[in-house]
Amino acid sequence: MTDYIVIAVVALIVGCAAFYIIRQKKKGAKCIGCPDAKTCSGNCSACSGNCGCH
Image 1 (tube, rainbow, N blue to C red):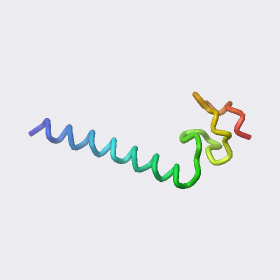
Image 2: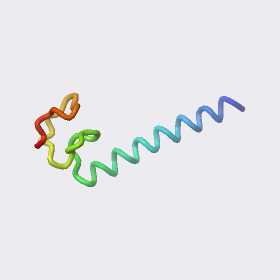
Image 3: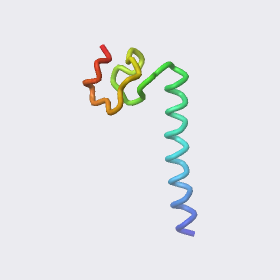
C-alpha cells in the first residue's frame, strides 16, 4: 500500500511540473525559471540571473 502512495505522490509532482512548464510556454516564456523569461533571448543555458535577458 505504501508503494502506491509513493507512486501517486511522485506522479502528482511530475504532473504539476509538466502543467507549469506547459502553462509558461503558452505565456511566451523562453527560459522557464529565468527571472526575465518573457524578455529573454532564449540563449540561457544555465540562467542564474546573469544571462543578459535585459
